[in-house]
Length: 309
Image (cartoon, rainbow, N blue to C red):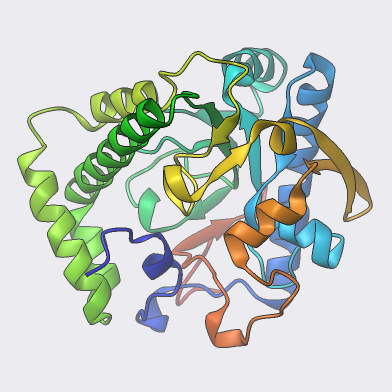
């Protein structure tokens, strides 16, 4: 049984009658909306000298496609953890009327990945069933300092991994009805969901928000801003699987992305190889990641749900 459900959730066997497929024109329209959100994020980063870079599939898209991976339906950014609070303050001041800003301090949010969400829009996935602020979003992952001492780094990583598991279980317990409905047609996924829900029940003595804040505090506890390595505890491969040299990640180069010049890690080759292996290989359709969307609404337009026009 896999305790990490990130990959299982993205490739789940679900009841297609309940989910919207973002493909062809609808997908492209959504991608263009994400570009505009990212334009605003990058603008603030450049103005405030905040270290950012395209991450995950967005970095892969820049390198392999000079834009979005054709079937990709999200946008990801890495940001230096030491710069994060300064970014949030500057972004809120400039664009607080335009966006919802979700961080570990947002009540019942339950993620240490932060999200910038467009007001007046809706993209409702399984994490957002009861979320009144489920707008189109760009994910922001924090690049965290690590101890240089190998033993302390091992201890820090183990603590972050343990806290991350506890947080995930606590959120699964809060969203248990939705998660069980989502995974009911996927035996492997349902086994993991039930385990996390049951463990999350034991952890419910503390609020989801408190668990989120505590987990983030553990991830950012190293204050060595010159450490040899940086890590992305919230990344798909977690603390130890996303341990990178500071020199290769803190420094950036520009890459083409949908006609823009946006930053990616200087060592983007090492970064992408660690995440994807042969990252220039095009996966077959059945192995491509996607979100399962319950509702989508573009600003000023009618909401689209499964079974509606």
